[in-house]
Amino acid sequence: MASRGKPAEPRRPVPRLYLVTPQDPSGLADLLAQALGAADIAAVLLRLSDGEECRQVDHIKTLAGAVRDKGAALLVDGRPDLAARAGADGAHLDGVDRLKAALSILKPGRIAGCGGLASRHDAMVAGEAGADYVMFGEPGTAGERPAFRAISERVAWWAELFEIPCVGFAGSLDEVEPLAAAGAEFVALSDCVFADRRGCSTAVAEAARRLEMAETPA
Image (cartoon, rainbow, N blue to C red; front, side):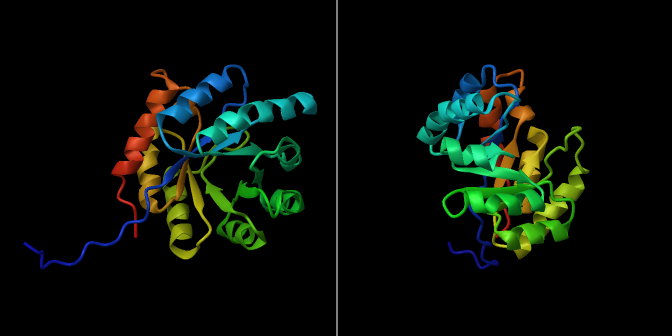
């Protein structure tokens, strides 16, 4: 029997996961293999430890194949020059100034993402400058984050007004559903999956289930 009620609102596609690696490279290849095998992953942001650039380039190249084999993009955190040298898919930049400085290196063939956006104005400037996505809620250098309510409100504001994709950073698995419900196209995960005592694959699979359950806006 056909319903006479109000037609159901269309839903956005289910958001996808975006992994941010630990900075310590030890065991990272195995952790990534577990994570990439547990759910659909859109992108992996590789955080580099200090060291010689030749070794960093080799590290990027070593991981790139495994990431791409699972259909994910490999981005390099803060080093667009190394992303280009190693053939990565792009880079993530902290702040508008660094984004603008990286565009000539990354464009047109690579992804340029931007985080570290302290205000709505900064986010709009990043979008106008050519960012392929903006990220809200990632920890600062000392590990500090805004209140989650502020992060969720920023995601909802962006998703309602702009077409450029938004990444919401989840500090815990409990933040996955609210960020998806707020309108994030991607939900970033880092320590809450890589340091999960149950194992990385279990945590990533749980995050994917929570995305499926989220009531995403039209």
